[in-house]
Image 1 (tube, rainbow, N blue to C red):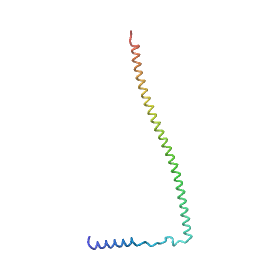
Image 2: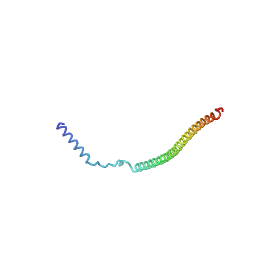
Image 3: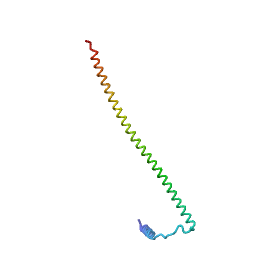
Image 4: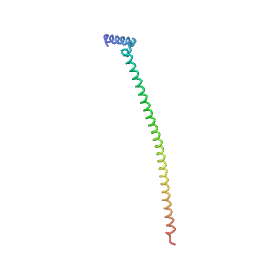
Length: 120
């Protein structure tokens, strides 16, 4: 960096520092409005706030309704999971009973074979 660039950079930094330190003058943005215009603007702002508040109340009511439905769906999901588990338990029980029936049928066949199959 040559000397000229360094001087320009320092000068720019000094001007920026002065601009930052100088307070901005206060200017009333509504000074050119008449009192009637200011009153109308204030009434419109109040009405706008009331509309926003009403919209917020409606949104909150809708959110509450949706949360209620979510809770209902969660409880239904828990019930469905419990029913599915119970169904799986019943399927396991049926499977066990079928295997016991099959084993008993085999024992009965063997017993009948021994009882009726042997000729004395």
